[in-house]
Length: 573
Image (cartoon, rainbow, N blue to C red; front, side, top):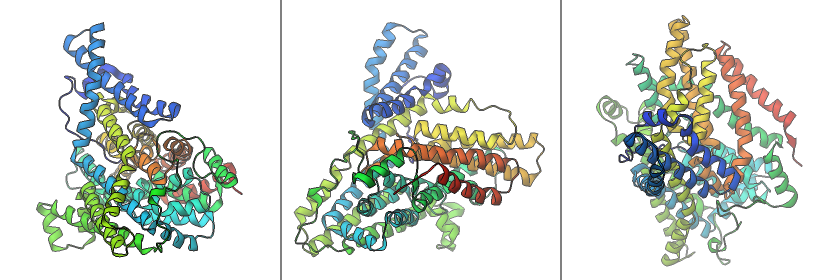
């Protein structure tokens, strides 16, 4: 999940997260485990998330009674059961009222309305036809989708909400399964935004790096420079982007994705055969949003509103971030307002949820104006269409509210503290990076948030790497290089869960944007995510920790991915 709910919740129980972690130990894993396990068993994500939240509030309420009364009785369980339901409401309300989350909700609703308007005007269909003229096969359709995902690098939410509706008709035309389409757009969202040097992610990443270095006594470290040094070591991001491209070019798949692709190619059934109630995938073409027969469809009906959204988003990031600068940063920005350093700072400071909401709202107005001007619909029909677009997003909003609530509960239970406590204080220096990457991957999958995983592990990873480097007798340059590798492991492992956990908001948005059943998207994507995760761990972080050059390890792994795909992947007809 991109947004980690660092929400200042009311005092729901007397125990701190540390006390809860000590009290419950391994049982702090129950809420995420329940949510994830039930999601696979029932294929109903709402029920699964709700039960995960309920199990978490039960543990929090039980903790209150145990620590207050220093005993456990049937009365405790009775009172706990009653309180658990009321606490669910409290967590959901706090998640919805958090300014960042509220901005995301409004942003998603407005972009849903914008997509509905563009679809009603025939713009999305016309744009898909334009791409279809360039795309002569399923291969080029997938490559074009991949490339468009790379172009929208500045924000993962914007990426998912723009690329999906534009490219989905083209994917359907060439019989690309919804599962594969969802995988492509999901893989070009967080993995791209996470390593982009100008994005809405970079502020959090640089801030965490700077704070971690302060903890080991480095006050004047250039955190942005350290971030740049981590990019070649961001194996999961780089390997996943390459892997997606190779599956398209080599026309090879394996596991559930192969079955999904074969179903789409041989039977023409683009959407998953097994339908759950997680997302509305029943209709491939919504008749309400179909353009009128007498309307001449035009690609500019989509291009102008979408370009407006992107341009306003970029300008909004700049001015919103600029207004948040202060002190020395503000002086530098005023002196060189368009320098790379200034752009990096303002994008990092920008409130992406507010900016994208504003951009989507104005772009919707532009779309309404175009539709009315070209007599495609009148004002009343335009507003009805826009509101209809909001309605299509309601299910996604419910999922996000429950996912945010679960993240807050997991934080308060001290789940992350229990997991990180399993890290040994002393271990061989060449094992630490791989261990940190594995823990970051596990934590991000369990709690469904990249930002949260980064915030949990970064303050632990840097001091631990520094201490082990000192004990190993490394010189200053080697120590710095070693710390950079460990920072990369935190940032990259955090992407893993955000890319495949069923409770991650990016995965939820990918399913919605692709109009793919959510659990089918998760089921088909996890084998690919684990495949790249294993390669990153075994042939990526371990070799560079042993001293092998990154410029040898990186290309060799790209070759390895292509070879393994050729060996284990099955050729599509």
